[in-house]
Length: 370
Length: 267
Image 1 (cartoon, rainbow over the protein chains, first blue to last red):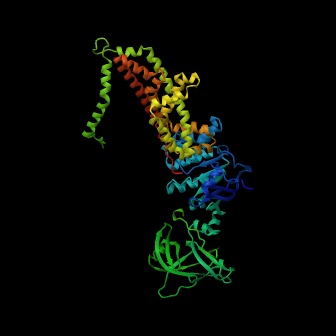
Image 2: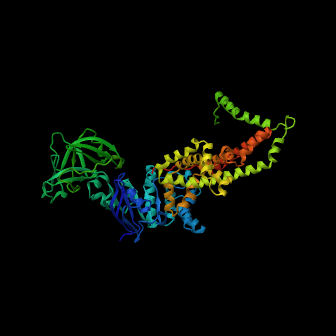
């Protein structure tokens, strides 16, 4: 049994099912990220754990004790909010001290704990500043120290970095992870940023439509997506709707082109599948004029090039689909926009997911959520 | 490099002088009138002020109205702070309705209200019906309702009530602690604004007190006005000074800690 258990949680808002029976089991000291697009139910789940809302059905168990109907102020959960939540009338020190005062801790004990925590989050020099004298990143650090001060049983973080600029976000997420590991505190983290979730978590649960699509380690989520949605949401993925034409040799057909894939071996002929290929697994080269493309490849034309720093991302328009490929900037220079290219699909690099026989069944994601 | 101060344009200066004249001339005229000698009608004498300060009724009615104001403010704050907090937190859809109810004291004339109140509470216990601290305080709470509600409403809108409440609760605070130590300090300026408006109403309300036959400060002012013109002018300035003193203390308390409520980000 896990330290934090969410058992068959349901939460309806009128006709909308915000949570439709989610189950999570998290070990003590582990870090789980709830990841998903807006409206998937991740914040609802977090608020149920915090006690700010009650489920229509299901249980929340912490360390073997059912806390489902316990008031939020009796749960011992530390929470960091998306909005800046420091009490404006109190200094950083007073904010961190607040929970300790409520618990009746003596002054010496309080002062030491506050000093230690503000030092831990790197704000030992700003103890007497008011929230309006702190930057957004500093405010969230104080909020983290304040949540940790009460030695919570579970630390809850509700998109704490979403209001910060990119550089501070990366810096602070690493600090959150460092502190979490140092204190060994069980942590539930809500985010819509998959990079953030993969970077800091022991486990990631991808949510969509009020259910958990898949839960696993960041590496599992990236390399072995269990559903088309997860494949789409975690990282960037090329998706080729295909049909198995020869299961014994692992041949699939996509838009009239045959591809041989290891993952297709042993599949039933005629089965509809989704071939998933990461952009970094595709190899692009210039198409030779007049020459027929060799096996396991798709031909097309470069539509756009996007410089991403270490790599350049190329969008290629092929027959029946668009492909995305990442390659070194130096090599990409040889494939300008408009160039005819051959995209080689590695036999061993692709993953396959079943598609329903009567339709594509692919979720459409808002590009802003990715 | 010297920083040049922005220059005030001539038209702005003229308007400033006109506005100052508009407000100051009546005050100066009242002051000049109040320092004329009661006997010789010549300048300058403090007799009118002496008359006021040596009048037992002045101190008595000032105390009655002061206590009434304090009572009105305390009842209003106890009644409206938790109400407006709850409405913002739990039932924001009721805000327009309460805003509408708050306008009723503006719409119903005081004379109608006092007749209604006296009729409704005719059989109430004498400690309530016969004393200014009872029925009159209740009437003044109604009169102060719009001022208190709109001031508090603006104060609550300037802070992220939900997030502050939830942050406080997650740290172990109950509702009362959250209200007293997190919410109230952050709406202090709004509560003070409402309180001083209530004070101004009580110190100047005549109709209800007169019809209910209570002897308050505005009633005393009216009596003096009928019999002692110089004294009335002096009393007017004293009353003006009390109001301005209250306003300045609001300004002073509001600024003394130099902190603006922070408007938190989106939920």
